[in-house]
Length: 329
Image 1: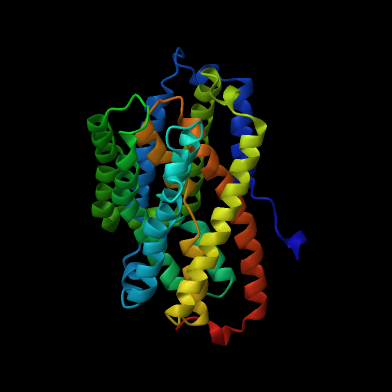
Image 2 (image 1 turned 180 degrees about the vertical axis):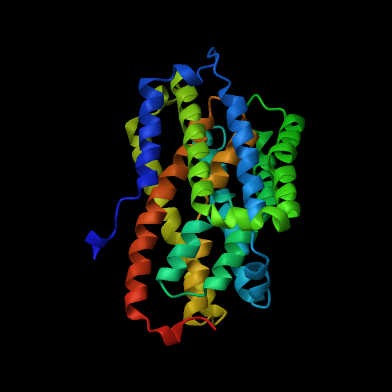
């Protein structure tokens, strides 16, 4: 079965961007004449503008009645995840591991991913309308909840940070483009749907640019020089444990709520996912050109690669076991 799981090309591209940032960081350095920050900001705005254009009214309306599923998924995404990380704050506070802990909090506060959640639920024969609804609404709720969790601790961290500027950047780069896209959807929604592949390629290109810039500046400021290889191994182990715990807990919650098989698949798949798209663009808006950006994104990228790999295996296995009669009504 494992031979059917292909290595995700986007994960390979991310690794390539990090290597490029290490080998050739000059275009993204603080002294570079290339306006990479401006390009990234425009790209982020366009991502959320196109996101607004492609949101489906039908998909959003179709699952509104299944409120138990929606509350469970959104509660797991924006409450269960952060609370699991908050438990360890007293142990990390004022230690060398505080920045690592903060990077995990950022990961935990992010919305669920859209495309891969929907695709994996479809493969596993889960509740597809429920997946589309929750993956879509999660991105919107993330605009509110992700900064909320970060701002609770940002004042206690030793960062050069301007909250007022961050609020302005969040509104101008994310909220306004999203609202504009929603407003113009009736005019350009069909065009966006017909060019979905091109828009997805654009999204990934901007993400790769942000990853490149983030790590180039982290390498420039020698942020990773003080991190021992054992800390990277520890980070990888913690990422895997976090996924396993959340996947198990959401499965247990689904059993308590007596979800049917299709709803349980959607519950676990959507609840355990975190969006690299939103993570990279939110990190840009929240932390700007800070040298800590690479460190902030590192657990997220490890989690992204692992969630794609493991959920792909689970989805294929569940899909093989199910018959069409078990699909959600």
